[in-house]
Image (tube, rainbow, N blue to C red; front, side):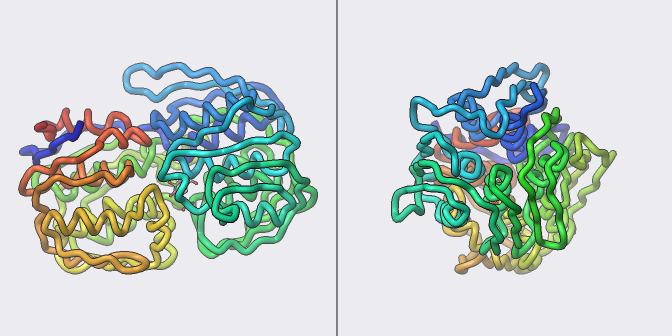
Length: 436
Ligand code: S3P
């Protein structure tokens, strides 16, 4: 059922960010491969994507128990590691649902094993590029086939014997990097990766905490095959989920929000830099370290925003936040230009085309380019009925637009927000923004 959002008179209160999706996937996958016992994972992401990872690991013979969190806390899980070579052949097809992270990281885990596995997902996932992981894994000795000349899921992993490789990554992708590091754990010899730019480093942090021999020098990573030691993970709040409230608050004429427990890992925090460049009234409070990841609370208020240019190395550090940054850019004073973001075209939807389509429909002056967008700025966002494009971040960006637009915004297929943030619409309701 569609939802309709209208601007509430004010936007005030406190929100606790849900557990980070990227860290949650990794906490389950990596601990499943450890050989030193049981790990405890708390504040696990409530989204469907991370549940796909849990179900796949269970299908591969890993014992995982899950307990619902109380009083708004995320779920607690225990994972009993089976060791690097302990995964069992599943009786059915492994379903990654909508999750690119599950598919690409699991590809590194499933490659070159003596069990046969098939990994697939929904329509969106089945159209996303998998050649970027199949090609280097094949170079390492894995036998993998897939649709469209081994570039699309379903992917079939037949076996092979992995050898370490030296690989120059063509894209700054944490999913690709993590996939190859995971394959490298079981390979003969060293795996060396050169990244074109920095991307989120949760894999490096967690593997190092688990005792893996992983060295970083500039943008190069060098991993030696290693066993994993179990590590307990308290998952920090997801900055990509917090981003929706940050933008809602800076754009709303009467807003003050405190967002608690947000991960501010520098390789994820591009949104903070971008919003501060836009003149956002955003303060970090009580910066602290939680299980090897920096965390803070965020106080954010109504702001006089200005347009900015976003390109180069910052882009991978805020790649998931661009659809909601576009909402702020639409109303900011002056032009915003986003470049070097061609990866947006191969996310859960083509996020450049989808964003431009709804922005124009809401009366915003906006233009797509092959690698980004240009927003004239100084517009108000009008109302209308818009598609979610089967994309959780598009649906939630539309929800934010509804909180600040001049007329109500109706969002089709809002449930897709559950991929990363199932309580998103409930929070909008609590703000008094849900009118239908
Ligand atoms: C993710 C990496 C990013 C991001 C995705 C999660 C991860 O993808 O868009 O939502 O957890 O590694 P790429 O690394 O492919 O850009």
